[in-house]
Amino acid sequence: MASLYVLPGKRGLLVRPERQRERVPLLVPGARVEIIAETGHGPQIDHAAQVNSRMVSFVDSIN
Image (cartoon, rainbow, N blue to C red):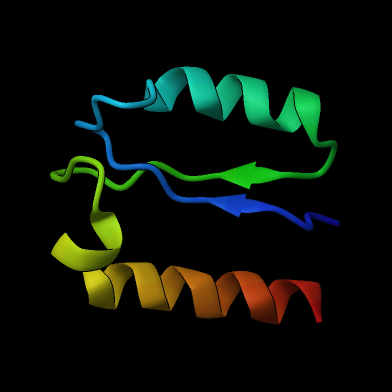
């Protein structure tokens, strides 16, 4: 069961989202990474409703 959930923006310049999707679960077993398209480093600002929906789904899945 995942205990870490990462939502990077596809166009993020600070971290490479595709690489994070590969590496994070290796470093934190059970971690989940989902990339938010059409945004950069601030998906929680640019796509707040989508991020909130995904976060609620994630929390529901671990309860």
